[in-house]
Image (cartoon, rainbow, N blue to C red; front, side, top):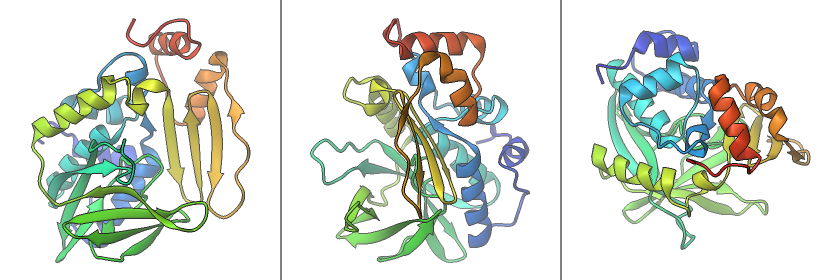
Length: 270
């Protein structure tokens, strides 16, 4: 935790230091999600993302890159603790109603002012703000509703499907996790052939009312209150421009390698 530069982090997300409160937590959570991209570029380049806080800080804060749930969550948790919050690190099973849903998603429980909140800044196009850990708690996230439902010892984070039916995005209990648990989950997520993160480039940028998504070579802007457009194909020579539009800037070596992988001329990690 001591390796995290909180001042640099707050400058990165554009929020001043504030005393712990539910309102301050919501402000910081939203600023984090709207500023730091969700992306798996390193995995597409054949690298397993480091879970060392010094490496995460260098990547997401100083180099102004993004990352996926483990990187987002560990950085956010450490900064919250440095700011005086009580944080418990947990794990969720993504798509719990699917036989292929894996327990590989980092979630955070933050206790402040007598209330426990689910904080989840690394859930791709999901939560813009924390949710109170209360059965039936429903909140809007940039126009997309989410709710929490208690199911025995499990909590289910639910969102409406295209028919308006509530479906589970992920499910979790409140068991604290150890650092080694994330090492194991990170290894699977970054290296296994069945992981969606090894199969294609994924970038998501959630904002109020819209979400920009690059899945493989398909770019889509989804809207909360109006019909979304059709996805368009992105060629390898457009990657730099598109990634910059998604707030990701790569160095020349990274961009060259990603173009090769993206165009299918070189397998990841070759």
